[in-house]
Length: 159
Image (cartoon, rainbow, N blue to C red; front, top):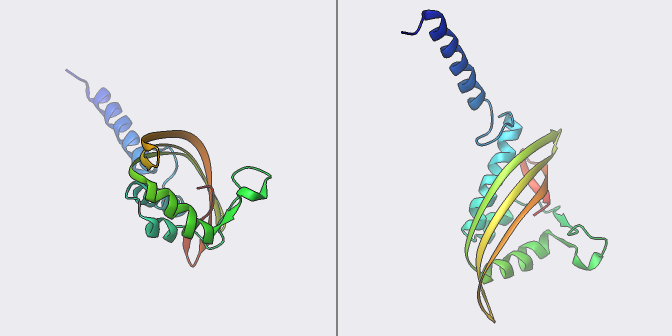
């Protein structure tokens, strides 16, 4: 038979653990502040839009200020919002027939109207290419950058 004291200690520990679970974003140890939740929601919407191969939903999450340098000094592989919306996404998604994506959010840092999210993503896609069907998999760490525009965080770099 459990003593009243042991029961009280166990109930206190359980309530503390439950309080921690509700104080963080799902699946993370990141505090569920309003700004962190907004960034989390954008990343979840991004994952959903990728899996649905929905170019319009993806571009709705991206700022017109978007710029990608692909991590190189070669300007030839740089592109902005217009090329992302009219070339990169439509061409990539046209070849993609199925896509599965998981995103683990490791950190979110908000500084005023700017924010970063450090993520690990895994993707698996079935591509229909001229040479035939191919399953392609990727697993990487990435930093996604955001800016608040009209009260909403928008992706400005890191796709």
